[in-house]
Length: 109
Image (cartoon, rainbow, N blue to C red):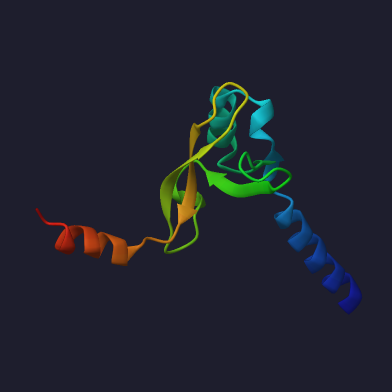
């Protein structure tokens, strides 16, 4: 019984890890990339770096903050697509409070 319960837990964890779909945005139009993220909520986009040949880049892109972890906010990002070099998408990031503080108090013209 204990073995079956342990196996079921591992299967549940494996299914959760496979829940986020992976795509190559360079094989899709920008509209299709954005529509895919909107439809699924969160996806992993993987593509080759244009600056370093052979270097794969990837990240998790989200529709809105509901798909971010606690304490993270949605931030604008850009990925290449089949029809444009910079397709706007969103990623989850921790807010940079130091940067906001410096901008507000040190650059007050």
